[in-house]
Amino acid sequence: MSRRFWIPPIPLAAGIAFQCLAWSLVLVHAVHPSFGIELAWVHAVALGWLTVVALAVLLHVIPGFTDLAWRAEDVARGTVLVICVAAFALVFSFATSTPGGVAFAGGALAVAIVLYASLALWTLGGRAPDRRSAAIARALGMVIAALAVTALLGGQLSLGYAWADVRLMTVAPSHALLGIVAWLTVLVTGVSTRTFRPMLGTQSRWPAAHVITGAGLFVGSIIAAVAAPWSPMLLRAGVLLAAIGALAYIADAADILRRAPNPNHAARAFVSASVIWLAIATALAIAASWGAPVARAAVVIGLAGWIGQMVNAHIHHLGVRVVSTFIAGDDDETRPWTLLAPALSWTAFVTGQIAVASTALRSMGASAAFAWVGGTAGLLCILAIVLNAAHVVRAARALR
Image (cartoon, rainbow, N blue to C red; front, side, top):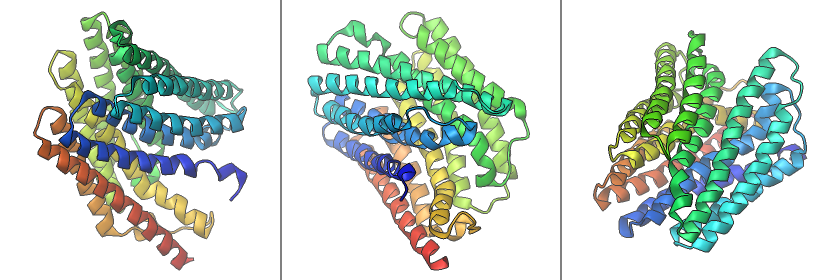
C-alpha cells in the first residue's frame, strides 16, 4: 500500500470501534444510568465515530474537490491519529467520572483539532483553479472553522467539568449546536449533494435548495450558538432559521428519492431513514428551544439517526465502490448492489433504526428495557455491516 493510503484505515477502523463502544455504553446505561455515561455516548458518536472518520476522509476530499494540495499534509495526518487516541481517553474519562482525565483529553483534543483546522484553512486559502473549486473551498473552510470553535468550547467545558465551575459550563448548548449543526450537519448536507447522483442515480433539480440549506443551517446555528447562553428569543430565532435550511434539504432529498432509478435498495432505504430522522430531530430541536424536555432525544436522533444512517447509506454504495475498485482496479464497472449480501444489508437497516428509536426513547426517560434493546440492536447493526464488508471483499475477488 502506498504512503498516501497507509493512515486512513486507522481512523476508519477507529470509527467502527467507537460505534461498538457507543452502543455498549447504551447497555451500560441500562444498568448504571448516569450523566457521565450519556456524555461518553455523545462524544463516542459525534467525536470518535463521525468526526474522526470525517477528518480522515477530508484528507482526500479537500484536494479531490478543490484541486488544492494539502500544506504540511503529514502533520494533518498525524493530528487525526492524536484525535483518535484523545477521543478514546475523553470517552473513557466521562464514563468513569474522572475529572482530571476529562480535562487532559479535552485540552489535547482542542489543540489537535485546532491544528488540523488551521492546516486545512491554510490549504483552502490557496488559489483555486476555477470558480467552482473556489466556492467549494470556501464552504469547506466555513464548516472546518466551525469545528475549530467547537473544539475550543469543548476545551473550556472540559475544564469546567474538572473544576466543577458552572460559569465555564454555560457554553454547553453552544458547543452542541456548533458541533452537530454547523460542523457535522452542514458537512453532510454539502457532501451528499455530490454523492446522491452516484448513489441514487439522479440529482437535485432545485439548485436554490442547496443555497437555502447551507445558509439556513450555518447562519441559524451560529445565531443560536451565540445567543444560547443569554437570549432565549434569539436562540429560538436561530433554531427556526436552521430548521428552514433543514426543511429545504428534506424536501429536495424527498424529491430525489422519489425519482431515483438506482436499484441499490439498501442505500436508498438508509438515505430515506436518514431524512426522516432529520425531520424528527428538527421538530424536537424547535420544541427544545421553547423549553420542552426533549433536547437529549434531539441529540440522539440527530447524531445516530440523521447523520449515522446517512453514513451507513454511503457505506452501502460508495464504500462498496472503493473496495471493488481497490481489488479489481479503477476501471471496474461492477455495480455495488451485486456485491452486497441483501440479508445482511436489511439486517443492518432494521437493527439500525431500532437502535436509534430505542435509545432516543431511553433518553426521554423510558425504562431500562429500551436501553437493552437499543444497545443490542446497535451492536447487531455494526456486526451486519462488518460481515457484509467481508462478503463484498470475497465477491469482488471472485469476480476479478
